[in-house]
Image (cartoon, rainbow, N blue to C red):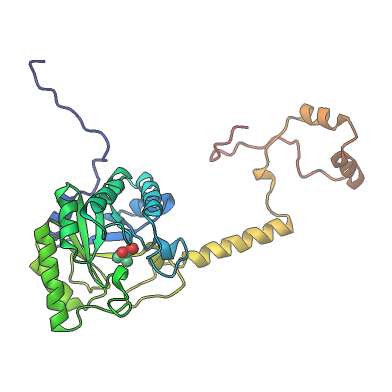
Amino acid sequence: MGHTKKVKMAADSKTKTTIIKLRKQKREGTKTVLVTAYDYPQAHIADGAGVDCILVGDSLGMTTLGHKTTIPVTMDQMISSAESVSRGANDALLIGDMPYMSYQISNESAVENAGRFIKAGMDMVKVEGAMIERIKAICDSGIMVMSHLGLTPHTRAKMGGYRVQGKTANQAEIVLKQALALQEAGCSALLLEAMPKEPAAMIAKELDIPVYGIGAGDEVDGQLVIFHDLTGLFWDFKSKFVKRYCEAGQLIQNALKDYASEVRGGAFPAQENFYEIKENELEKLLGDSKWKYEADRVENQATPKHSATPITTNKTSSVKR
Ligand code: KIV
């Protein structure tokens, strides 16, 4: 008892992105890479690609649940998505997006809902709009907040639709003032959506916290793109700021077409996909000629598809034979 013992805290990987790394990247002018993900495989893929941050966005509603907007997304849906993303990512800093009406009602419910994201494995939450009092309450509770200004989909009706923000000097100055107030309230990062590059760059320069953009030009501290937009898995529309890096949807559909045609043509499954039965067990089974299978086999004089020939073990399978 008389000596202090160094206690090793478990959990995070040594290579995990932290807020300290994000601040350093801003200081040094290294661009930060952010992408959304909504489930375990997407998180696994994004994390393996070495992105710095994964946002479990409420764009889940559109990319994954098929809604026209993000408004119907619930906390329970976001938490389920956040939990699976946290199981798939080791290194990326994880951000949970607070859905519509999860932070507007009261400071208490905003803090409670932010806490649910942390329990689901997120490191930070994202909150839309300049809701200073709510955001301060979350920050004061010890939870890191990324604020989201510019085009904020939760208030799209008030903005007159999905419109680029900060296009006039007056508008841009309002966003800058909001950004400074959010930094003062304790935010750890800021995301600017759909703004001309110059005012976004001015905000990034003015603020000490990292300022990222989605459709806000190239002079911010990093970029966020929606997973489904950049991989070709979303077809409803394509925003000007999106660049597609592959057509995964097309690739997957082609694979499914090949699969369907092989099933219909009898090429799949093939010998290497079959499980074996020992010759003597098969003989025992077929000994009683009541089975239609055996009658057909004799009649066709053909080797049945379920051949008793031993096959090599498929090392990639975890199924016990
Ligand atoms: O939900 C989301 O993915 C977002 C981005 C569009 C910024 O909020």
